[in-house]
Image (cartoon, rainbow, N blue to C red; front, side, top):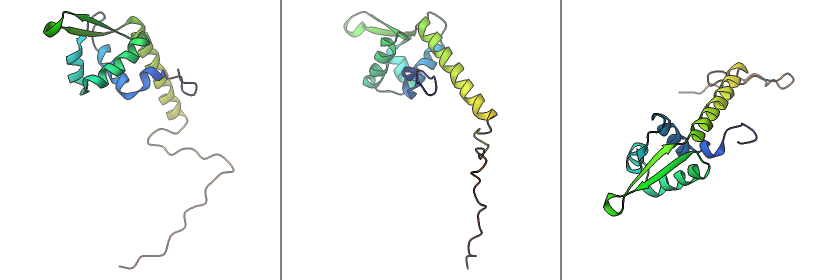
Length: 130
């Protein structure tokens, strides 16, 4: 987890987060073929392999290869550890979003100014002639 936010850096990468969320939509024990996952995410084989290796090294996904040659198939599934890690990740993210909105720094609210650091009001500029 990152020290500042508590978000797991293995999951936090945009592509790896998409992989995790896509696999989390499957029932426990179900898997997707590598090719189908690649199609769903719109990734090149090399890009997907790189991200799957990082997730597999962390114990978050499992890959199973079956068959040989033209009948070879790789299945990808989310491990129990991966489900727990994604659950923790989403809980931490929700807490961060909730704390931002309760601090008045949500996406539709300006950041609160601290006392003693009040910006002077904007002065109107010269009128522009048409």
